[in-house]
Image (cartoon, rainbow, N blue to C red; front, side):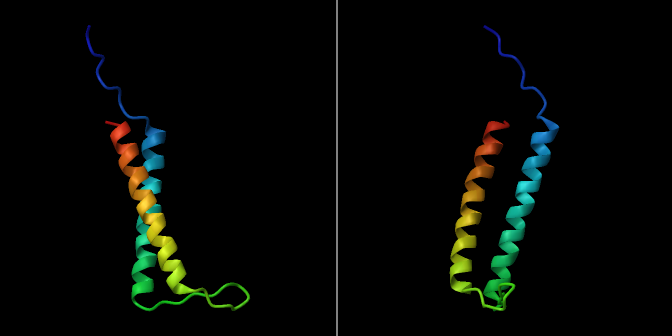
Amino acid sequence: MSKTPNSAPDPAAQAALERFKAQRVTAIYRLDLIAQGATIAYEDGTPVDMASEKTRLEAVVADMDRRIARLERAGE
């Protein structure tokens, strides 16, 4: 039985993965801003609980890391 060579990666899938990686970088940048003391507020002026936002973003980044690793393994 012969193996078929890996086909070239789907350009649309590669582009989607790169966009997803860029979203991860943005989330990490936001975490860095929070670590530097940044604060944000809702449109009505109510301040956002930055501790909760930090926890949420950390979970988002961890989830993105898992998804990216899985997608990269699938693309090999």
